[in-house]
Image 1 (cartoon, protein in one colour):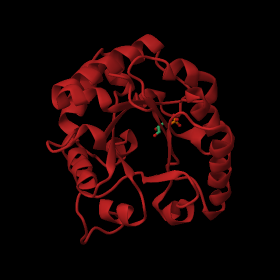
Image 2 (tube, protein in one colour):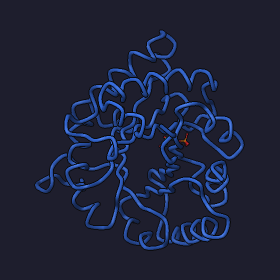
Image 3 (tube, protein in one colour):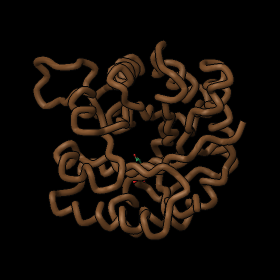
Image 4 (cartoon, helix red, strand yellow):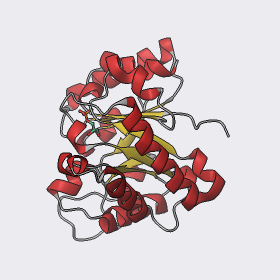
Amino acid sequence: MTAPKALVAGNWKMNGLTSSVGEIEKLARLVAEKGAGCDVLICPPATLISNLSGKGIDIGGQDCHMAVSGAHTGDISAAMLKDLGCNYVIVGHSERRADHGETNDVVKAKALAAQDQGLTAIICVGETDAEREDGSTLDVVTSQVRGSIPETAMADNTVIAYEPVWAIGTGKTPTADDVADVHAVIRNLLMDRFGDAGEKVRIQYGGSVKASNAAELMSVPNVNGALVGGASLKAEDFYGIIATYQ
Ligand SMILES: O=C[C@H](O)COP(=O)(O)O
């Protein structure tokens, strides 16, 4: 089976104001003029989804609640994201697993809520520095992948983003061989879970991806795109990563 079409997604995290509309328009112009051999997605803060929608770039959420609606002050639901035109939502980002105590069960419930609304869930997994140091990377990633994918998930509404926590925003990246090892394990887990359709699930790499290292990281076997933080905030920087798929 041929590799799935890559997905290069920008996670703006808690960055961006209404003036950021110019950045998405610039990105849409670059993609229209120079092309993109991958799917392109921006996940802005929820406050900007309406402003950035309809500009020619797919827009997704950074998180969703597991309930459709209710008394959950400050949260947003997958139904609300869908209502605004989103097709994707990130769940289980390490900044949420760490800062909000999200367990695999919580992440799975959020992914289920997303998929129930017709969204594709980008499920994040990855080991901390301490876990890497004690040699438990593959065990941690295995238990996160197994524990975070809903029973009813399908290959085409599931994306896995492997993000070593120690590589996020640090400028450090794993070696290509280390990325290949982890992605191969994830691929096998997806084949166990989805059968042959597991080949179709996109496995993104995330953590200090930038234009200068994207070509090497994106050419690793079983890497089907990137989840990009800092380097997605400026259209030219982000397009430099997208362009590796020309
Ligand atoms: O979701 C994106 C990741 O956390 C990566 O962030 P970064 O590219 O700034 O390291």
